[in-house]
Amino acid sequence: MSLNACAALVERSDPDRFRATMAAPVAARRILFPIYAFNVEVTRAPWVTQEAMIAEMRLQWWRDALEEICAGGTVRKHEVVDALADVLDPEAAKTLDNLVAARRWDVYKDAFEDRSHLDEYIDATSGALMWTAARLLGDTNETGVRAFGYGVGVANLLRAIPDLEDRGRKPLVDGTSAGVKALAQDGLAALTRGVAPKAIKLSGFQAGPILRQAIADPSRVASGALGLGPLRQATRLARIALLG
Image (cartoon, rainbow, N blue to C red; front, side):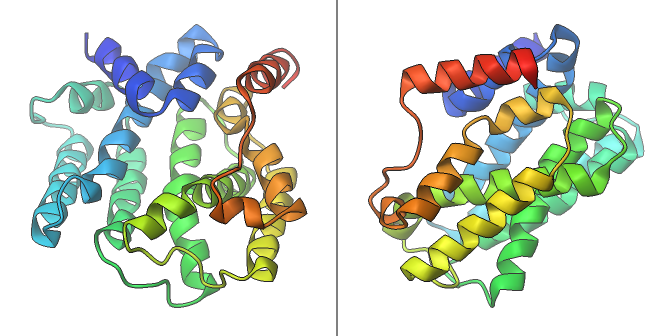
């Protein structure tokens, strides 16, 4: 039931990843759904309240849960935690703890210090998520998977820009057209050189088109016009599922 609850949570809150995971091999879903459900919970934790202390407490709750999983003893009762405990090893729990720590940036309204800080955030969130899932599926190419995760993370960030700015955040180091284009180009380059199992590649099925759209017309970022229509999404997802 915990696995079903994780799948339902991802379906409600991250429909792209839900459809991508349903296109993955059945055996992979047992690992992917708990990890992606965890990501949903952690990603939204800073946004459910305007009180920074409460948001910090919510993130710390997940860090404590991961520490319990890492220790290998009794873990707190929670549908996502139960499912995570069945699939994570200590190394994965520590990697995901770093992901939670990186999400503290979302609590506050401070800008990234520089491009390196932004890149570290994307790697610690999207890169770490992809690498954890890939490693638990048997992959060993951390550099390749994290490069792929970085590209997907840039695409996801660019899609989220209008919402982040509406919430008073400063998500871009350089918000000019040239700066947006350069970030998208770096993301596409990382995505292109990235290597990941098919089950992981599926979760980034829109990333390439989104990055190309941002490169061709950076104004689409501010207007929230990035992404594929339903038919093109279905076609691209099917193509990756069949051909990788």
